[in-house]
Image (cartoon, rainbow, N blue to C red):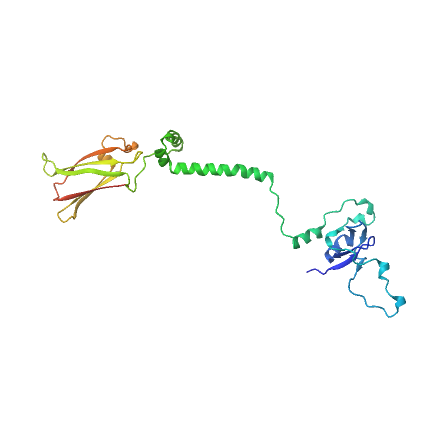
Length: 278
């Protein structure tokens, strides 16, 4: 911690607490913050240490003649440095310059003062935040565009138009958990007119309130021990016929399936039929 010294204003006898760094500025020329007197702080340095009483009372130090040492003890904040020309012309200085010691004192002993927000920053955030929110919503809508179009059909024309510009497409939703799709009344029979030919019939039903993408079908033939004899994966194009795959299975719709399977090279006793999405 810098050594503290004390100097006294010759005008009002107010004592100030100062540091060597402060006295080094302007060659010690300072101005009293109480009576505005300009004086040499180095020349007016005093000590507040107790003085020993002299033996000869006639030669006693007359403290009263020097003025009271500490009527009000002021710190360095009340002592202002002056310009070089103020010592010669004190009347020329009306307003004090910025006190560097005062700033240093505040930095050492005061909490950081929060800066007032600038108007330009407020305007920037006022525009940027809504823009970011709109951008985020737009990204979510783009990512889940199929779900939005399926559950809110009124939005589909706008989404289709946006996809035309962005190079994307609106597709029917996939029922990955198979909550809305089921296979009803499937059957496998031998074709009486063609030896070794099997006829597979089934109905794929949708219970959703929106269009659902056509699933893939996995058809498996098994022997008497339920061991797989042959397995085949059927894409929507293999069983949907002339139906428009891009539109999907309509809400609460049903798709009839009829397939001819050549099983002349196998011996089978049963079958499995599953739906899935790749």
